[in-house]
Length: 178
Image 1 (cartoon, rainbow, N blue to C red):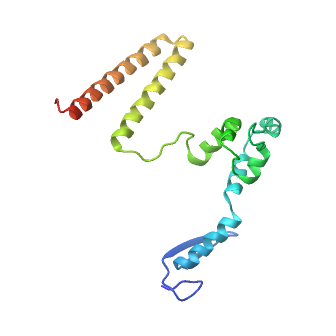
Image 2 (image 1 turned 180 degrees about the vertical axis):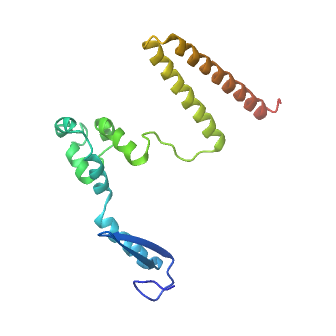
Image 3 (image 1 turned 90 degrees about the vertical axis):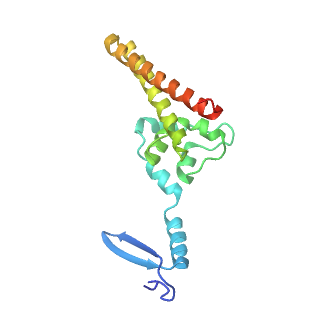
């Protein structure tokens, strides 16, 4: 199939565009796809995405965010919403209150969960589960739900025991003592 735009090269990229509720299929070669990508980036930049997502903020926070400004570079929250980029490393601290919910909406989480070896991922998940249980235990204690707290305490002990046991097995395998 030839490219719909240039009609010369083999189409390797297939796009479906929906404009005004009408679906159009485009079959593009690599060069035309790059040009199309550049056009789309100009029309819909990252700043537009971030600004659109930031519009979900509660109106009560809006007055507070107007006066918010980075102490290092002077970027205001309004400027960040407009350009979609932070000015310096200190901006992460200055706008932390607003970045957390924004990142959670974009990525589904405000903690980095990139790729890692399977073994590391399992250990990390267990640590996260353990921390979640500890947080639940603290809440149960604060609410004076002592029976629930005792159950959670037992779950924590069991997880810690399993974690300790697996960790000692891994150490033995590395040392060659197993």
